[in-house]
Length: 286
Image (cartoon, rainbow, N blue to C red; front, side, top):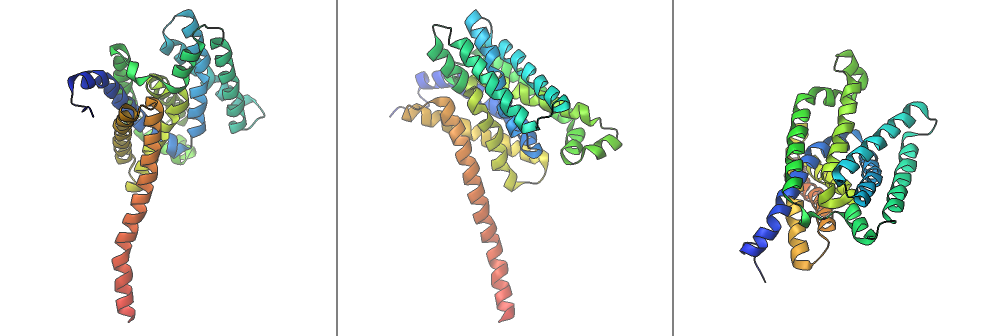
């Protein structure tokens, strides 16, 4: 069995590992706010919403990230518009829009001769094909994400718990909500190449869910989520390499597995800690 340290393998997987770790960093920071604020469905909608732009860019031979970003922005704007002026509920509006955008994307790509390949990459990503330009985009996105998360930490916290308090404190909750929406959109678009539009939500949610039992402070939770996300990337690449499975799906499945494993481990830890207290109570009673 070949080793990951062998030069051909290391050279082949190094760009994928670098891109995947940067995507894990972005999704770990943004995903923490997604879980705290209950924005999972919105993240899924953005993943679907970028498909028409990616499809048009693919057919026309344009940069897919640009097309995806523009389409995701349009999707985000439509969600906000329907929420403010429509009579439909928030989740119903999102559901209708992301199904519509997904259908539109598939219709556009179906006119391309490379439909099968393009659709697979669109939906599930192609992390092994990541190049220097994609890594650079992920690096810039990671730096911007961290900068925004640090600069607007207080408004984000206030909005997550009570927008009225944020307004009373002069923390501009509407701007904070807009920035959070922008970060989710940016994370989905930037991570598209790594795990695809359908699986990116797994990388957004699972690492933060895995980190949540172990810490109550948001910055520590972000750091733990980044760690779990990085572990999912490494584990997914290993599984994909040795088991010949789809890489993006392997990374997303690894993230979900880590989330479940974290929950089980924390429950066992709680039982281990509580057992001595129970024994002491029994001794006093006896």
